[in-house]
Image (tube, rainbow, N blue to C red; front, top):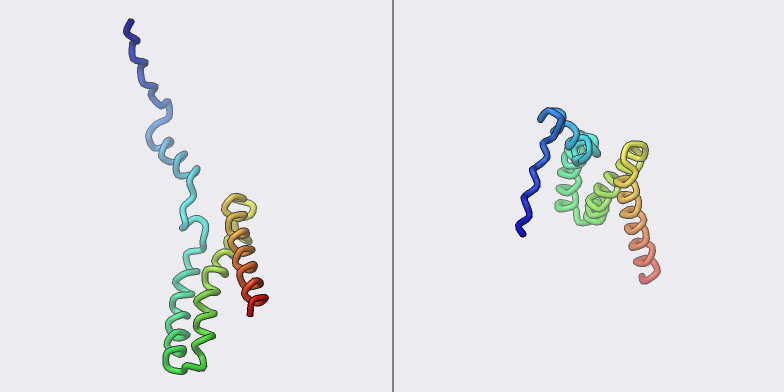
Length: 110
């Protein structure tokens, strides 16, 4: 008894529509974050880090700035993507809450 192979089903959509449908299903980072966010943070980070290297008194501020960049990005995702993609927004919110919990526990331990 040999089973006959099932014929492969062909998509009824043209290739262009199929590609567009797949693209709409999977959002990329470029669709979630504003394109200006990380370049702006990078160009601000350069003088802040230089100041932290040249003036040791400013080093803690440089470190806090570098820690704040991903938190600001997560906050932007929460605020801008809540209506478009709730899963991404909730993930960013959980990351922010986790960061807040780390800061809170660190404060208790100090």
